[in-house]
Amino acid sequence: MIDKQRCLMIETAFLGDIILSSALVQALHNNFPALPLDVITTPVGATILANNPNISRIIVFDKKRHKLRDFFKLLKHIQATDYAIGFSPHRSTTSARLLKMGRVPVRVGFSGRRASKLYTHTTEKKKNRFAYLRYLDLLNSYTNGSSHYTTELFPSEKDTRKAKELLNGKKPIAIAPGSVWNTKRWLAEYYSKLTFLLSEQGFSPVFIGSPDEQELCADIVRQSGLTNVLNLCGTTTILEAAAIIRQSRLLICNDSSPLHIANAVNTPVSAFFGPTVREFGFFPYREGDIVFETDIPCRPCGHHGGKSCPEKNHSCMRSILPEDVLPEILKTLKKPSRH
Image (cartoon, rainbow, N blue to C red; front, top):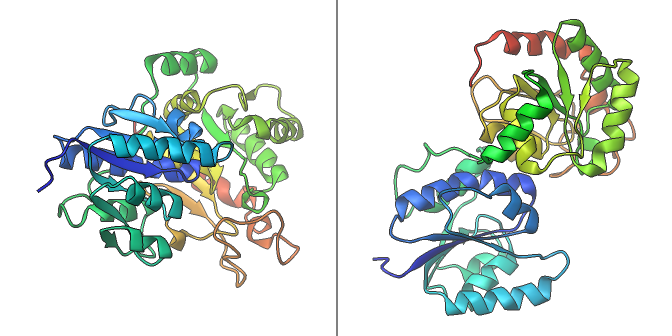
């Protein structure tokens, strides 16, 4: 029986993975109500998980800039804290070592890799399954009813007010054309054409993204020839962007973190998948969400995509045409709002 003081989850993967782990956060809070939940995550993870009422403490692990220093700092903290149980939804040897060397008595993670030897309890990481449900599978030893949890984010009242001010009363279509991986991006000229077509139909597009994607969004807006498009790319925090997406009718994006933000705030998603496939588990999961993709032999070409197409043609994205996706998007926009 678990009767010690606290519960710990370590999630230091990509932004999308951290958002997907929010379902596990909710499940841990509800299944271990006597154990305050601490979460160790990256600096950006701390930003996206802010205001989550299921989390007692967020502890930052800056593994990019200060991995060794922060590792031993965190190890000292874990050893000094009475953690009863620890979870690692990311297949990370570093996370597994923190739990093991931190002397957490019950350590839960996925089987199948070298790090799994450091856990006391392991679960198979199933293929062809929503990623957030795979994370919830880590609770199989403790409950039979974890699959009803979904991802969630908590923009503050300030974030929501800021979004309303920026949108000026509009309920737009949010567009996030960026991705860390170049091959995951639907073509900029296609985004421009789709933006123009949506504007012709009377809709208000708004562009969002990271500071690194400002030039991309500006180029797309310029190519569209429109002067009434709101470009907020690089001007908001992540939770402000989440608030904007929540107030939008739809998010159009690639296989990237905005997709997971939209699912977490229950906004419909239309996403373009090229080098990656649904079978990886990172596709939009809510009813009515759409994935645009083409069935060609070279897909998938990598778990994350890549900087350039191995076939030198980017056919997986080039073959998805704006005029073909527009009718499906218009069908989605005719459905009742989720908010």
